[in-house]
Amino acid sequence: MSLKEIRQAIFDLNREDYSSLLKELNEFDYLTSKIKVKTCVYCNSGHIIKHGRYNHLDRYRCKECGKTFIPTTGTIFYYIQKKHIFIDYLKIMQIEGIVPLAQIKKRLDIANQTAFDWRHKILMLYSSGFKTLDTDVYIKLRQFRFSQKGRKNIDEKFTAKANHLPANVIFAGNSKNVQLRLSKLGELEHWDLQKVLKRFIKKNSKVILAVNPVFSNYFKSKSYKTIEVQNLKKTELINLQDTYSSNSDLELKRIIDKKFRGIATKYFQVYSNFLSSFVFNRKRLDLKDLVKIKAVWFKFIQIERMYVNFIVKYCGIFEPFDRVKRFWKNEDRFHHLEYGALIGTSKI
Ligand SMILES: [Zn+2]
Image: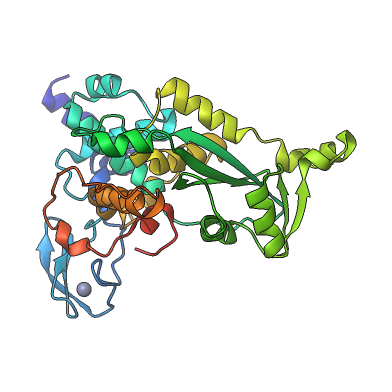
């Protein structure tokens, strides 16, 4: 078709097809025009004023902290040049899950580093918040190997010690939802559980668990009603099947070990957030909602710092553990983030 013919064909479209074609062609503009700005993305103040334009978007200035920003600041589109290819990547991950880097870079004709960064940026969409489960809840513990896959400049002394420590992952779920948290390297103690469990479980929920002294003691101390599956008769177990029979923990272990051949502990939580949403909860996020999430960029650039913070606080090894250097423009603006922002225990 010549350009002339294409043009004619477009003009011949009915109104509905015409506007849906336009929408498709301008998907980025369309999506970003839906973002409402009410507070400052840096300091959360409501004292903001319009401050000119940036392409099709309004620019804002915060009267509290003085910084300027646009509606896409902090979202998945922040600092992305090839936005239409990025939207394709996003759609592919929504449908197919995590596609091997070698494959996606060929399909979209992008560089290796881009394929890697974009994947992680998209994973960050899934990484915030606890959802308190409002029915009976099962709690399971799985231990994964500590992994520094892909890391350069590995510290030998630290690694020799950390390799012996299990990466503890707590699963909380019911028949509808599964959530998990990487909570510690090394043996779990009472307060490690406190941090995670109280946010998953309602006070009046029954907790179903396999016997494990640390967990049992924790629940006893908090006066939760518990059911320990080892003590049950077969018939009683069948009644709990809906809640307890989920093999999400084993399934996740299989995906991580077989499909990814291990995930770096640094990225464990963000991959798990995606997998639990994609594989277990079968949730597909709407593009229109995705572009509104403001914390993506900040988490993306701070993951290394948050990881170092996690290692220092939650592994009990007193070797110095330094971050791998990769500095981002404006990173210093977001120095307030801790690992809690990644696992959802503190607000961003
Ligand atoms: Zn501000």
